[in-house]
Length: 118
Length: 113
Image 1 (tube, rainbow over the protein chains, first blue to last red):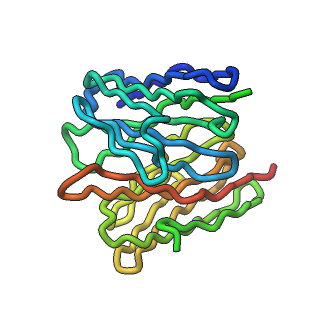
Image 2: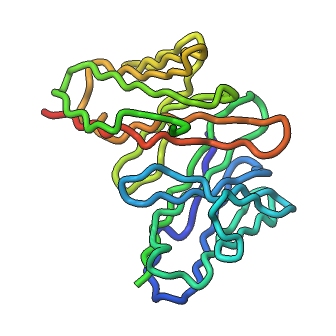
């Protein structure tokens, strides 16, 4: 079945550091990938939709200059948290959906990246 | 009103019991529906898609009522391994623009030995 890989799974770094998170679709091509953030005891919130070969679409309240998204190939999207601060500490998760074949296939999630900014 | 509403729980039930989760959604343009489970500090994993005709997968039964904008999940003969947070998820796929998954806050389930 569809598999999405996310790396790294855990990051601890100092305030002011920029952190890049990778999301890969392993056995299918994903023209669209999705980036979510989940704070403790809260639901997943969509941050942005990453489109291969074009600009990402950001949800309201998400700073595009803070969270840089690049979707350079059909199997890779990256999220860079620039100049991260403690309030950016969260669980970041990507997802993708295999758009071929059956309609309305579910999205599959990466393992998530737990980001802790000191 | 939240786009997807669930009872947050927690539900603490004895092993072997039957558990029912309910979910309502507000956007009538929602097109596909899913239940995911999320274990503590892990990513969501698909449990099952939900179809209008209702569908069953082993001990799990999902129902969708589009008229009422209501989704349910029933777990029979619950196991200790069923302990998790269950997320109700709806997907909107517009004619133009990107699809969007919206998550409920999840219902925490603990199965007691």
